[in-house]
Image 1 (tube, rainbow over the protein chains, first blue to last red):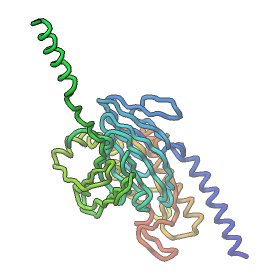
Image 2 (cartoon, rainbow over the protein chains, first blue to last red):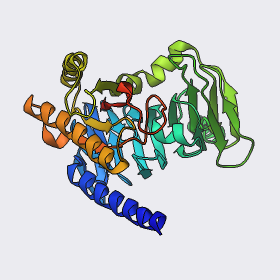
Image 3 (cartoon, rainbow over the protein chains, first blue to last red):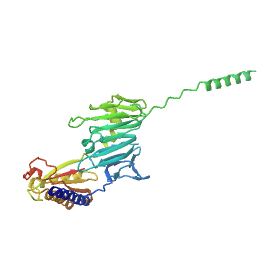
Length: 157
Length: 207
């Protein structure tokens, strides 16, 4: 009985703690990352609307990030993954979930065109199959941390 | 007569020209290129490249190992450092600064920092000042002295104390997240009810 009671109190306690943590939380749960570097033209398309994405802009799942011919952008995700795109790039942040307590999560993005540099974060570290980057011809399973990828290039090298 | 012959020659030349148009060059096929970059500390690392249009996957697990993917599958390729720089230099130079972690220690049972950790706060402030759109995540921890529930509260209080200090020093409240983890993540594993200075801490990530 006392065990059961303590379990109930434990659950109650974590619910209350969760509520308190929620109140002290700085970011909306929907925000999955923040733009940290911008050069040239950078836009984010969300629900069909495209807007400029300056430093400090908070990205969300399903956002489409685009750079112009002179544009580059760097984004830090909430799991500490770093994504940065070169000029003429289109990156879709398709799916993202991250549990700050267990570090379990899922991060799937697609580079339709352009170039992308990736340093993976806590999601990939916690479970090696949890992070992927798709290109028009391949899907990359991220086991380690740092790589670069270009999509749909027709130039020589 | 001469005019007719000349006309025939001209027409023949035009017909000949039309019959042998220069073949258009085949459009280059778009390909995707992946390069695994070396880890700073030489830790093992890998990216598995699986073709979407059939064929075998390739595992890149050596520094600067590269693969190219297109309609005909995935193949390993070699890129020179110059080629990597030329293609990926812009993306690499746009990389945000790496997140950095700091540890601050507390006096036993209190929300007060040790003297050494008070100085470490200066390093945290300096790092925040160097970053574009800085975010600060403050996570409080306790040692195993006392009840779990009390430690949950104490750890959150410790995180809150640090958060307030940073706000007082001008960091935007909306950019600081405070969380408490109680005695769940011991830095030094101990039995229950053991005072351990290294476990009474706040871990700060600045990114």
